View (spheres, helix red, strand yellow):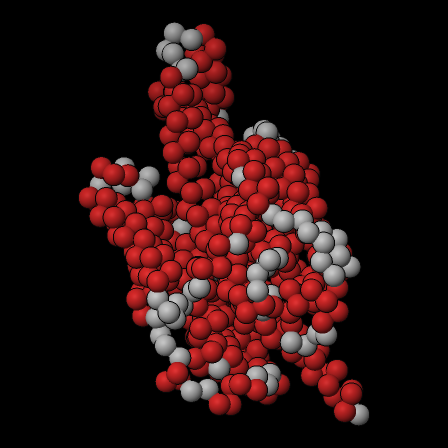
Length: 526
C-alpha cells in the first residue's frame, strides 16, 4: 500500500510541477496574439503594448538566477508556495487592470512569481526520479520549456476571439489555487529546510540591486530606442549609461565578493560560456519568432487570433513528440553536441524559409517552418543545459544551470525587443523604397488607379471621391506590402544570428562520460 501511495504522490508532484512550469511559460507568449486588442481597449500604441510582454520577460531574467539564493534563504517549499500565490494574485490584477501601465506593473510582479515556477519546479521534479531516470526527467521538463511559449498563442487566440482579453490572465487563478494546495499538501521540505539559519546566509544586496537596475535600463533602451530616435533622446542616453554602469558594477561585484548572489566565477569554464551564448541565441530565436509570427499573420495576412494560434500548433506537436526521445537519447549517452548542431540547422532553415514567404503564402508554408522551429528548439533546450555543466565541479553545477536558464530568458527578452524595433525600422525603409518607385508619369500606376476608380464609380461613388478612395486603397496596399517585408526581414535576422554564433560550438567539449557522471550532471541540473 505504501508503494502505491508513493507512486500516487510522485504522479501528483510531477503533474503539479510540470503544470506550474508550463503555466509560467505559456504566459510568456499568450499575450502576443492579444496585443492588438489590449492596445485598442486601453488606448495605447502597439509598441507601448509590447511592454506587457517585455515586463514579464525582464522580471524572469532578474529572478531566475536568484532562485537558488531565495530557496536557501526561505526554504525551497516556502519560496515555491509563495511564488505560486504571488503569480496567481498578479494574474488576477492583470485581468482587472484599467490602464496599460497598471497592466505592465502587474505583469512584472507576475514574472517575479513565475521565475520560481520554472527554476524550482525543475528541482522538485528531478527529486522524484532515480539517477538513471534523470534523462527522462529532463525530457519531460524540456517539453514544458518548448511547449509553453508555443501553445500560448493558441490558447490566447481562442480567448481573444471569443471572450475578453482579461480571461488570458484569469484562467491562471483556478490553476494557481490548485497548484498551491497540492504544493502545500504533497511537496515535502528538503531535510536542510528544517534547520535554516537565516543569519548565516548573507544577502548580496549590491549584486541584486545592480542586476535589477542594469537589466531594467538595458531593456528600456532596447524597447524605446527606435521610437525615441536612439541617442538623440536624453532619456535613452542616460539609461544607456545606467545600464552599462549597473551591469558593470554587477559583474565586478559578483567576481570580488565572498558571497555572491550569482557565482560568475563558474564562467571560467569555456564550455559554460559557449553553452550560454548558444542558449541566449536559442531564447532569442524561440521568443522572437513566437512574438513575430502571430503579429505578422494578424496585421498583414488577416488571420484571426485563433487562426494565428492554430498556425503554431505544428511546432508544438512535433516538440511534444521529440522531447522524450531527446531526453532518453541523452540518458543513453548520445553526445549533446549532435543535438545542438541539428537544432541550429533547423532554426536557420526556419528563419530562412519564413523570410521567403509571399503575401499570399498559405498556412502550409508556415506549418513547415513552424515544425522546423519546434523540433529545433527541442534539440537545443535540454542538450544545451546538459552541455553547460560538463567540466564543472558538482558544487558549481547549480550556478551553471541558473546562469544557463538566465541566458535563455535574457535571449528571449532581447528577441522580443529587437524584433519589435527591427520590424518598425524595416517597415519605414521598405515603405520609403516602395513610395520612391511610384512616379506620377508611370503608365502602370495610372492604369492601376484608373482601374480602381472605375470599379468604385460602378459601385456608386462619384468620380472625385472614387479617385481619393483609390489613392487610399493603393496606399493601404503599399503599407501592407512594406509591413510584410519588414516582418520577413525579422525572420531572416533570426537565421543570421544563428549562423553568426556557430563558431561558439567550438567551445563545447565533446568528451565521453560514463553513466555515473551523466547521472550526477543530470541530478545537478536542478
